[in-house]
Image 1 (cartoon, helix red, strand yellow):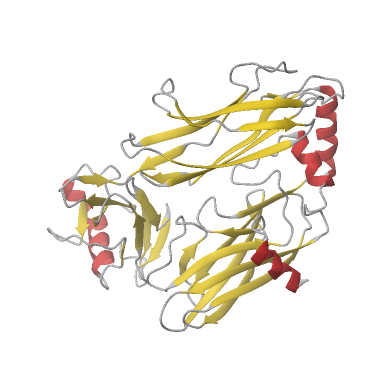
Image 2 (tube, helix red, strand yellow; image 1 turned 90 degrees about the vertical axis):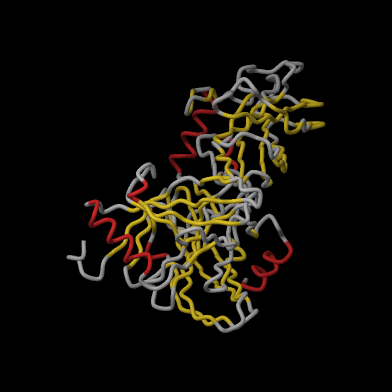
Length: 427
């Protein structure tokens, strides 16, 4: 079984998830999470916006032989690459969450030694004893499991769903009765009914995009009616949430033929224009935009994606509400395509409006060309904790300023973190 699992990882891209730039190699450790692989996956429902309120998807997850079922064994493999020039000792953790709750008894934790240039493949097997929405993620720790070095980025986890017997019964009832589920009217796909076209999911990654970065879209279109439909046209657009009337077309994909119950997946890539305003965006997909097809229901042809944040600087580490140890390593990472010089600002003012409530790193007129910073030993905790004492605050905030050769600057969003003092009476 293990040999077959590895073959899946090599040859079947639908099972292996290879991470793009959303996961950055840790320049301090030289380690990078390459992939998370599952032995059992299910085409639907799947993805960061997994819809579990669709009766069609729930029933398919039960009947599809490739989907994991209650009582099955799920094999999980992660690949960790050492891109450094020396052997690395690190703790590798595979976490299992079901419906937002971590199953600590099913997680895997072990220290590995990875030679320079090598890739460690960590295998973990779990018994699927719970129904619900599973989320598999990976963390890289130091060798004592005291400090997290790298996390699976949001949206890059592996997800799958196991329906309970109650879920299945409710789904059958909904299909038979045409009741409303989560605001959507579910119509029974009767054999001689007209076609009924609607979107199962509209997924977009990354959820926080840099200006000039490529968006990856996955749209699942279903014919939930009871008749074949031909020459299905669709329209995919984007818009700024503050300007919903100004929509721009991304693509016009079409489906030649769709049988009753058939799902067609459109995988698209798109880069927002570089002169696009920063802020929040959404993707809206419309099937049969000219209303040429007579359908069982005409008012369910549109669907929107999650909100996408567009900016010039994206903060990576530490994550929001992260806690550093006073004597530990302080690491800040970010990403940018438009800027080449940076400095970070740390303070107790959550809006950075009071210049006396924050400080720059590096200080003065110095800037750095890297997209990460490890402050000098004692530099950040000393200044930050002194500022917290002076301002009588216990919460810290950070942001990044980017600068181009022309002098143009931009400021990132703001995240917060805390520092655990060695002596609890320090603050």
